Length: 349
Ligand SMILES: [Fe+2]
Image (cartoon, rainbow, N blue to C red; front, side, top):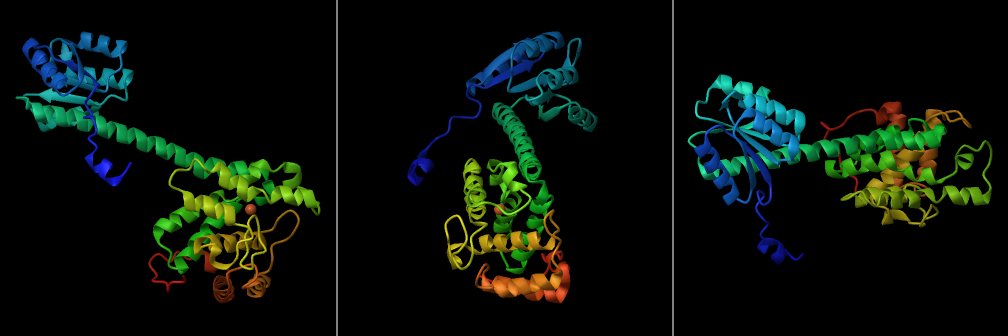
């Protein structure tokens, strides 16, 4: 869609085709409310007492429920309670001619999202119903995203570790290291957020590598190494559905590249990998050196410092490697612990 088309496009009103239940024991009010809502596009259904309202809630789905506060043989709170039990997705709008603080407080405790004061203004009523629906949908979408986020950030790293137990805790530690390095390099929070996600998921492609290769006790054969070397590409591919996260996929793909172009899978060199990607490359190796694995002890800190100095301009971005080597020498492992958000670090771009 072009910019002009998007500006000229008119979305159908939110109320079009939405189902509304109206519960009121006054026939004239019921008729008036139904007429207002139908005029705005709602498919409005009426009930004239609490029991009829409950029956409607049991028999068909609604997008919004309107109820008078005072009803013959009960109250709007009972309709609100029934709606919460039977149709928790439908927001409840309460109508009252006698507003009070006590009634408002009770309404909020009773699953009521909005209160409309009589006499009813048609525009306000329609706008209130639409706002209640929109807010309920946004809250539902937010809850869904939070659930998806929990899956992404907790289940997937566990999945990688289940496949490769030798790297327990690796992803979470790399998240911390990349974030500290990114802070020191003056990278903006939006990129840091993407980088943390890339760090968390960088080895997700290992799910395609047989455990017999990942956990092999001894040197790998050439064909086994070739299988392992596919994991950045597999990770890139399985994250294809992650909308708006192209940098995450790119950095996952690049996390075994090298500054001198001798890495994999694409042999990119120098700044062909952008700075956040180069940070991930370095942080990933730092963790591999600093932690004990089943096949090797943790490296002493000064050996790591020497390694980074030696690999500056070979495996790693030379500026980044020297920054880390000097920092580790100066501050020890605390170099990767300090939260520098309050610190105005010089940029490194
Ligand atoms: Fe990897």
